[in-house]
Every structure is written in structure tokens, then in C-alpha cells.
Length: 264
Image (cartoon, rainbow, N blue to C red; front, side, top):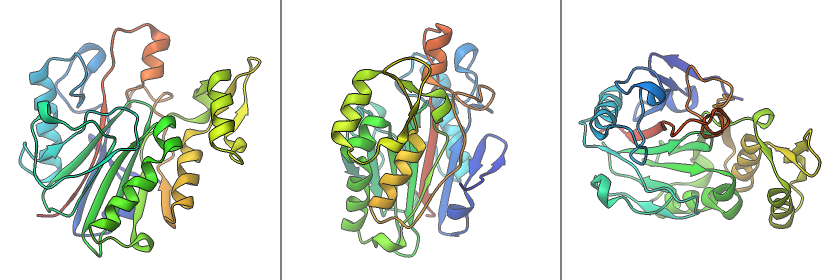
């Protein structure tokens, strides 16, 4: 595990902040202008929060990254293994349906939205290529990590130079899955049953999503991969959580943004 450094509204990973040509942040839910269940730094374009408040929050994120407010790009995430190469900012209404982005263009912040799934920030600082991926169980299972690494290589990155950091993600203790999940996982990820822990209910399991993501990163040849070791579900003060919202019967939830950029 790699301990992050918290500063106000964001958490930084030493493995990424060590490189002067990178800027990154795993933003928490603190420091924004949204209210009620969205309080307060909701960056989710797909949430039902006031769009003006979301825009103001995202502008604050850009300011923290030292970028103009239109330089944070996000996807229409669909739990896929699709990756897009980003060369210029695009409007929110034009977001491509995908779950990972890569770029070698300085001054573009690749922003992944999560609320339990795994946000992964990638960088080959030496060759000037960055990436960001949304890895829920489905994306991790179907190949979003391999696809992201491959897209980075297409831009000139070298696999053995890529650093990857997993941000706040729901932990195994908080993630019970049912029999349909267990059956599919055992079929599509043979030999990975160690990530299905014992649950209190019959035919259920406690799924270790962070552990599975780290295993997928290792299998993809990313030697320098680490996790911040932070659980979204267990820390309502700092993080949004879809599963916690569901258990509480709330109408909607905010989205955390994890972003990375090359210094312009």
C-alpha cells in the first residue's frame, strides 16, 4: 500500500508527485459548493446536482491543478474496457462512452469519476504519457487496465516505465456480492478465487476489488503499482459511496474526481 498525502480537498500519491512534469489529485468530497447529499465537492456530470455547482466544483479542481477551468475532461462512463486518446478538451455533452483516457498533450487533466469503483492514475513521466481509468469489477474483469496500458504504449510510453496508483475504492470488508457475481467471476477469472472472501450470507462473498485491480496491474506488467488503501464506503466524511447511499436509501450521490495532467 502507498500512503497518500492529504492537503485540503485532495490526496496526492508520492509515487506521482515525485515527478515535476506531472500534476495529479485524488479529490475528496470536501471543499466544494454543493449541498445536502452532494456536499460538497461533487464533480459528477452525471449526478442530479445543480449543474452550476458541479461546474464551480470542477473549476476549483482545475485551479488546484494549476489549469484553466475548461481543461478537465471526463467520460460518459459505462463500465467497459473502452479507452480514448484525448488531444483537446471536449464539451460535457460530447463525452465519449468509455472508461479510460490517455494523452501526451500537456495541460489536459484526465478526470475519472467514481463512488466506490477504482480510479487508477497512470504515468510514464519519462516519455510524457499519462492515463486514467475507471475500474469497477466489470471493467477490471473485461480488460480496461490492459487496454489503458496498450493505448499509452501507442503514444510512446514504455510499459516498464509506467507508474500506476489506485485511489479511494470500496474495500473488501464493505463489498458483499451475490451468487451471480461469484459464478461469473469464477468463470471469467479462473485462479483468482482468493479475491472472493467469506461472507456471512450463504452463496455470497466479500469481494476484494482493490486486490483484484492490483493483480490485474501486475499481470499487465506494471511493476510500480500501488494503492492508497482508502475505503470509500467506510469514510463518509471524505468520500462519496454508491453502496453507502443505497444502504441509506438516499436519492442520489456525488462523484469523486481523480485527475492527472502533464505540466503545460
